[in-house]
Image 1: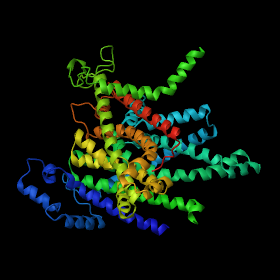
Image 2 (image 1 turned 120 degrees about the horizontal axis):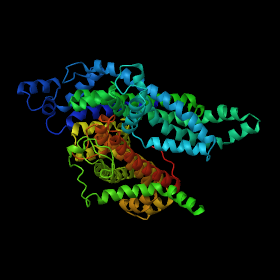
Image 3 (image 1 turned 90 degrees about the horizontal axis):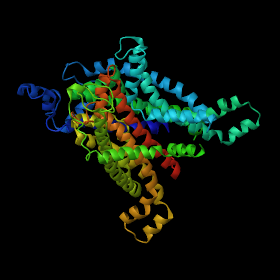
Image 4 (image 1 turned 45 degrees about the vertical axis):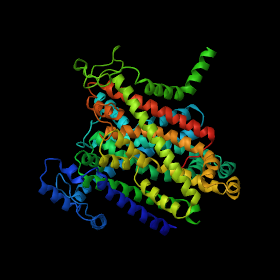
Length: 303
Length: 274
């Protein structure tokens, strides 16, 4: 089961590598010309062409690409000439920090809210929770982010506007990403718990005379959380994509901002590397989610 | 009083339809009314809302109300075109894959797995980045990445439908494959596809704005909600009306479409999963 799942990601990883490799070849016209601009000399162009291996046949290029990636070599930035792997090593911890804090915020907001909504279903608490999660899910990061910035940084002056100078700088981008995830998570928790509350084992637990708190926490919630973990894994990937926008809004120096900057400078090797790193992280997160899920759910583990 | 409450109740129930209707009317009439969303007036730079400019003016003194309407037009046109392209291509691929099975199915599943390995809008950003900015490339980037959901959904349903008695009966009566797909399978697939397409229109409105926000979509001087938000953020301290006007417009449209999707889903009793 586990082995099969592990082997299953091989073609996916291969496909991801192939697609990111092909990105540069999708540039209309000559990628070297696009990257260097019209003022570059013929010698510069020839130099870059051979540096990137673009003068080789496509299959050779791809094999070289694979070989370099396997050695952790992502190539060099066209603009700064710096090593892309080193650039990413600086940026990845920043994005990871942001993503983990957002995840914590999302769970802290969504679980209580979703549980409340399910327990008070069709009462005002439920309506309020549903309405707020619906509204939040209609607020993309590039709108929620500026709104939080306007209220908490510009009007109230409680938090830094953007950048990474102080420890408090992470709060607004993390809230932006976290609230977006919380919106989906609240609805999931509510639906999942409502479903479980109708199950036989919950009725049995009540019939045994357990107090309501025990029924909810030890019986219903344990079962309800399982599907939520799967969703959480998928949504964490959404968080990585959302980080591209959020980091740009708040000038947070993570992988997402590096990606956007590289696109603006037409620094395609950096763009390629960022896309690859985000996609591979997502594949790994999904794999881990599956593994955790099988460990937690005895029905899957022993099936 | 009783009647008044009823009216409010009816309005609250119907507001998604009214909101969507409003934005659709905007899109259809925007060409007829002379709005001049790109007209620069230096005297009005970042002027706050008043009676002549309902939503105020932007950093070049352009009327924000006109630009919000022009942005709505771009947004919805992109969303509908991309939904049309991806719905047709995704459904066709999913039907073929689920119906024939075998290596066709295996190949398609591997391809969709690779596409799904890129979270959210990342792949569209990557394609838009290499294709270059502009409306056509924006539609292309969103179409290349958008068909996967429909293909997965259709394929899963087609696998099950294939074994149904009425399809088996049609096969043994010698009906042609296209006929079986179109008249015996497609009608049963329509409801989940319509629900999926509804959500995807909301998703595409956001996606278009995201790409334009990053500078990968609609180019200046043309209005797009994404690029307007990007400009608005710069002047947020002195002219918050700019960001608020665009953000609230976008939110109202997306919220209305999502609620419509929820209602359609509940109406047809569909469990949504990808």
